[in-house]
Image 1 (cartoon, one colour):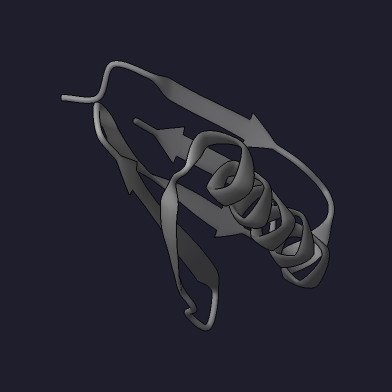
Image 2: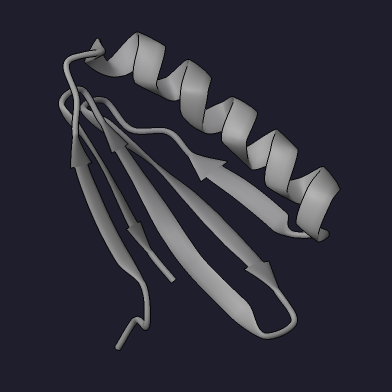
Length: 69
């Protein structure tokens, strides 16, 4: 079971939400030495992230972000 869950609604649409999520993935790779993988889908994407001591996912949809770590 995840220790951290964050669900945030937004009105960005999928294209803008993807841009924000991909930038987030690049930032955490650099700042926190995370390894991130983006799995693109038609209606949502999933960013999988991991490093020693933490792993999780960020689901990116047209109307929400859902982070679990």
